[in-house]
Image (cartoon, rainbow, N blue to C red; front, side, top):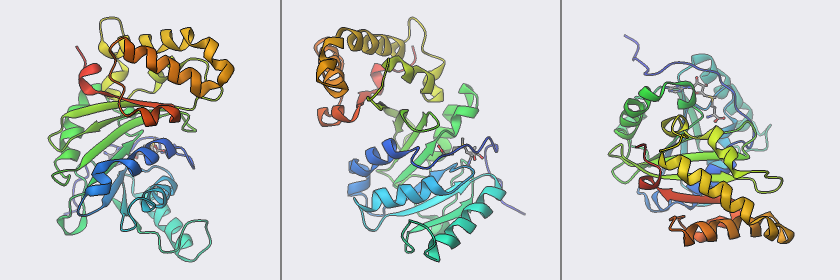
Length: 272
Ligand SMILES: C[S@@+](CC[C@H](N)C(=O)[O-])C[C@H]1O[C@@H](n2cnc3c(N)ncnc32)[C@H](O)[C@@H]1O
């Protein structure tokens, strides 16, 4: 009997370079840098395998032994990605012919040959098309497959990856943090992040919820920091985040601020 793949095929929208922000974050993360077996799963890679190939290329700079397994619930998308991989192996693309990437069919059960446990599972723009009530079960299924020190990175972004947010979830299925990552050049209001929150939070951007308070504070301080834009959007962003810190927000590693990014502990956004 064919194995059951848990989940449902949804729209396959994807794009070259769309996931560069989260890839960069994973590449710097201690989970990837310190793990014994750097197997990374790209779950729900979509209509093309390009984001899995990009993920491998970006992570290889941090771990040259990284391996990426792209999993898709839609069998036609697996065939298409494998055909793309043939092109890569033949040297007809910009990706390395030796890219350590493979593609297979799978769902939230995260089937991995040989029972290996991934250090990282990236599931981007996958749960967006599910119900909020499906999130806990999906997190729990995916994280149960992780290595003991692994992480699930579950998030959402716009079509071209300028607005992106993600949640880091531990192997115990408990969320640890929310990261917001925005292209600052041309940014009108960081409140735009509200439209691209992960499914666990997107319906919580209402008065009385912590994530709403956080995004309101961010927008207020961004507006107050307008005079700093004379020195560029990065300076304006830094001023806004500094003001939020002064007001008590914990915004993670400051070296990431210049990237248009910050990370808050889950307790700062957990649904009420
Ligand atoms: C919108 S695309 C996202 C593509 C890519 N990750 C990105 O962010 O550009 C979502 C993909 O997830 C796949 N998908 C949905 N549920 C899934 C599941 N449970 N397991 C594996 N793939 C799934 C869909 O078939 C679809 O191709």
